[in-house]
Image (tube, rainbow, N blue to C red; front, side, top):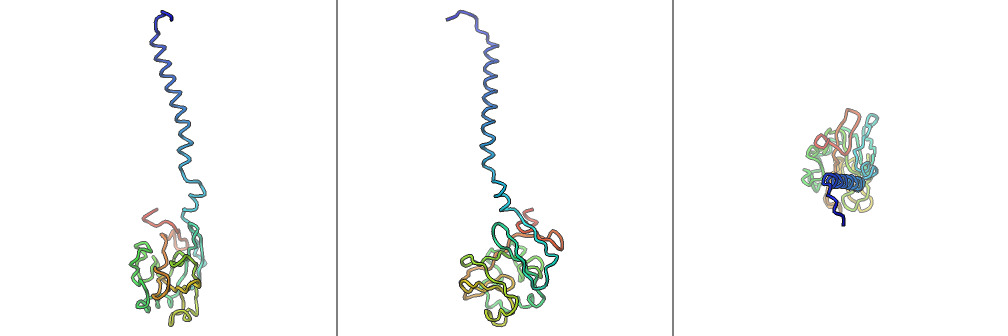
Length: 196
């Protein structure tokens, strides 16, 4: 053992320097670890809102876009289609849309922000099949109704507001996703004024 005097200043410096280097190393190791908790770009895009151009959408026409891996339908309903929406309330399972299958702004007879533009997730609420849009001759499915949605897998039928008829396997109306009109010709699906 040496009887040399202890240099307290040097000891303090070495202790502080070692602590700083150790702290920087810990932060350097933690940054990539914490960054790995963030969702990947692919995951972010899968849940991201999508835009749909409806400038060329004609009366009665349906277009499909994909949002979160699901088909979303956009239909420009004709005045005749809108007129039939109240004619079959007694045959619908949930005519007033009491089940939470839509945002509050779509809790109306036409289940949409603008009566003529219908936006819905195109998946049957029974077993997840994709119903067929029948613009004419829907009367083979529902007497007196000229157009609607028919799921050929198990026979579920929906009106032009995506409301399910009674007596079919589907338990609920079609889901209405959150959406908003960016302008008169563009819809943003996946966001609305409340989530933007």
